[in-house]
Image (tube, rainbow, N blue to C red; front, side, top):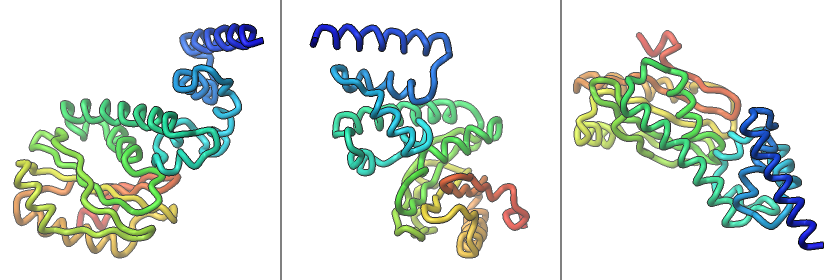
Length: 227
């Protein structure tokens, strides 16, 4: 029986690999294929289906925090680390491109990168992307971690870090874990005040991006950002 099971898994996974190569694979099957490398001696189809049903997509799953993943039945430490390592590889790919290509060449890439930074975080995080004068990424740093509906922003620290990195262009990124709404009144006031401070020092705020569960909001697309 053990040999029969082993032969079935090997044959099934070989077929999955071929479906992937033929670009005829469903999303849950992509996850099944991945999980097969992390859990080689178990049928992972039920787990793959359950995870996609829970989180909606493979992309959403990969952005879930480690602490959330290990709570899911069947996902232990090894699987959670495996999934987060894939997330890390994706992020590194974005950083490589953004470090060599000016960001205004592909705003969709910038928005997608921001989603991968803070999507599905259970509390607010405020990140700052530091760019050089050619709009190439120097550094992506976590500025502060807050509560479920707020995070701190510290102008002095932002300026200090920008000068240390010789960065003249910044992008702010934060998330709204509990709402699908865009910029709050406080977000707008804080952004405009920081714009004023940075501009006086020769530093440009290129954009402020808010990520919610379902949407990405860009301050560059608003009238108040350009006032």
